[in-house]
Every structure is written in structure tokens, then in C-alpha cells.
View (cartoon, rainbow, N blue to C red):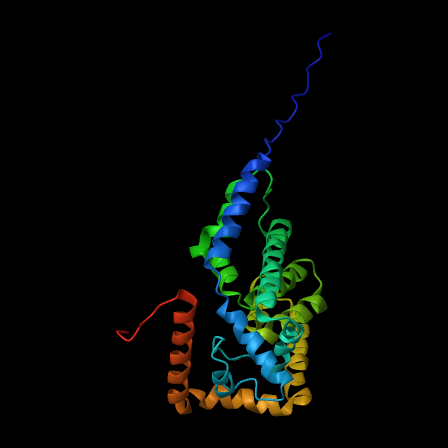
Length: 268
């Protein structure tokens, strides 16, 4: 009697640890060398003005600090509270802590994608990591070098979409509202429950509307003065601030000269 031997599945080859070390070091080096993180400066500056009892949306007070880059906060006031703990540190230390958090956020994004959306194994498919880090016009690398608060927004947004796939309607609405708290654009994903499924998910849509309305209502309720400053900046800043913006550009050019050691940029 002959017995047929069941073929064993081929084992996947693991990428050598040295390859991941080279890839990770290259990514970190690219971020470190190219870092300027001007978007982090916006949050840090706004939080400093807030602690001082000043208008966090005003450019003029920042002109009194020629050693720093003049970039103001431009998002709703509730999201600015995220940066208050960083003002307890000097700027040089705070920006490095923020970079570390951004790198953790990038790792969390990769985990969310691999678990819920794009089924890949980072240990056996280095091309997947290359695409995540350097693909899509280098979006992730650009995110890390600018230090934009969008990394927090993206983690919250993708967690919201993962919750939607898992059928957790309330968690979808809450996470989407938190993501939109920093930038309003994620609110457009409110239509995802209605267009991404064969049958519209009205319950998820309802929770999204309720959470968004509740979170956005906290801005004028908790911070009425800052909400008015935000509205004034959003609606009238472009018309009234041409001269102020010219001062900002001049101040940042001066700081660029200090950073690069340039002697004369009068030709510019």
C-alpha cells in the first residue's frame, strides 16, 4: 500500500536583520538631515502665546522673538491644547520629542494598514516598507520632515476607518471627530459609511454627525474668545494682513541667514 506524502508549504524567507537596519537607518537619516519641522513650530508658538495669555492666532507677538521662526497656529483652538505640554521644554528638546512621536505614529500607521487594509508582512516583504516610506511622492517622509500635526490626524483617521470595517459605529464617529478636531478635512470621510458599502450604514453616519457636532461645539463653548480669534483669522486675515505677512517673511529670512551662516542675502 502506497502512502502519498503531503507536500509541506514552502516557508517564506525572512529578510535579514541587516537589511532592515540599513533601511531604517536610511529613513531616519533622511528625516534627520532634512528636518526643519516648521509645522511643529506653528503649534509650539501658538501654545506659548496661549500660556502667556496672548492671541495664539496673532503673528505680531512672534516678531518679538528674532531667534525663532515666525509661524502661527491656524487650526481650531481645542486642538492647540495638544502642544501645551511641549512648551514645558525648550524648543530644541521639544522638537526632538515630537520627532520621536512622529516616528512612533508612522510605525502605528504601518501596523494599522497591515492589519486592516493591506495584508502584507513587513518581515518578508521589504518592498512594502519601501512603498510606505518613499512611495506616493514621498508623502510619509515629507510628513516626518515637516513635523505636521497631520500625523496625529492620520492615525486617528485610519483607526476610525478600521473601526468602521469592524462594525463599531460609535468608535468610528468618535475617532473621526477627534481627527477632524485638528484639521477639518477628515470630516469629509463622514460619507464613507454611505458610499463604501453595498448597503448604506446609516447608524455609523449618525454617530459620525453627532460626534462631529459635539466636538466642534466644544470650541466656542470652552474657548469663546479664541474661537472668535480663529474665525477672524480664517475670514479676514488674508485681506488685512499683507504687511504683517511681509514682516513674517523678512523675519524668517533673517533666521534662515542665522541658521545657514549666510553673510548677505540683499540680492534676494
